Amino acid sequence: MIIDEEIAASLVPVLVEFGAEWCPPCKALAPVLEAVAAEYRDRLRILTVDADAEPALTARFNVVSLPTLLLFRDGELAGRLVGARGKGRLTQELEELLSVVAPS
Image (cartoon, rainbow, N blue to C red; front, side):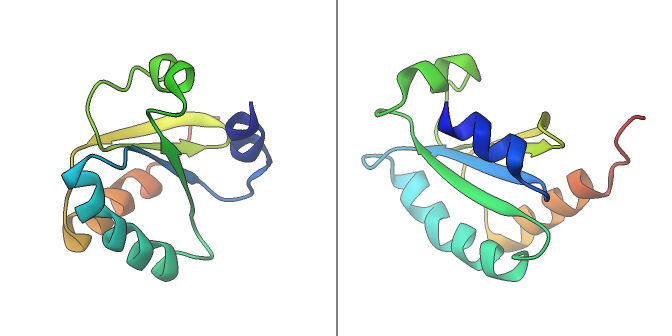
């Protein structure tokens, strides 16, 4: 799958947002993700998955609520955030997840 290739090829952590066009919280989260993408452009890559268009991928990652954000570090799932949130809260949670030292 293309998403697997993009996660594996990334030199920085990847945040994958699962959302849908019909989802109001997803729409509210979109400008927050844009701001985070600009602020973290050298430290984080953000990808968006349309849960309706990618049901197999959505099921594979056990996404049952939208929006769901999955953080991948070194190709491995390192964190899951469910629900919309403001920029302050999201950046705080991302900083916590990004500061965790990966096991050797």
